[in-house]
Amino acid sequence: MSALIKLQDVYKIYSLEDVEVPAIDGISLEINQGDFVALIGPSGSGKSTVMNLIGCLDTATKGTIHLGSHNIQHLSESDLAQIRGKQIGFIFQTFNLIPSLHALDNVALPMLFQHIPKSARNKKAKKLLEQVGLADRMYHLPNQLSGGQRQRVAIARALINDPEIILADEPTGNLDTKTGEEIMKLLSSFHRQGKTIILVTHNPALTKLANKVIRMKDGQIMGG
Image (cartoon, rainbow, N blue to C red; front, side, top):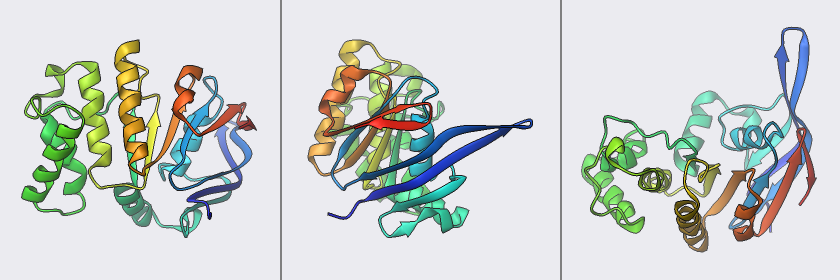
């Protein structure tokens, strides 16, 4: 099986005044289509930097990163934006919902940037909100929803363009234990539907649903 995601000898180095700080220090890894990967490590280990590189939110200092047939190191910002919009869904710890938009419009928003007609956007957004158990909350604003409900909206939004890859950065970090477990079950259900999921976490308990665990420390992979 050819890898969906392949990082080869990747470095990400930040310059702080005259000091170079390696956030990622020469890592190589492969993720296959349909994997559920847990990327685990303490704060500052480099796991979120890896997520940002895979998600085309940042570029590596050295090395190669392939998403499917694309070497994303050689792509323009407009090409990277297209990959982000069509192939990758993002779920963040802080939800990142737009406060002035109700749940339906928050979910539908990524389709707007793909120039999909409003009727088609709303139809798909309603279907996804029903899938995540929010059929009765479609027209609520984020401040009218609980933390768990907001994260469900964020998951629906991540899925709206039918991406191959879902990147989840500490998706249960702002939730209580019970609600966090519900969110993880929801992610697991979408994994069973064929999505490739990369979960970034510092919580070992969340790795039990993953079929591949990658441990990081000081910008390096410690073992899987």
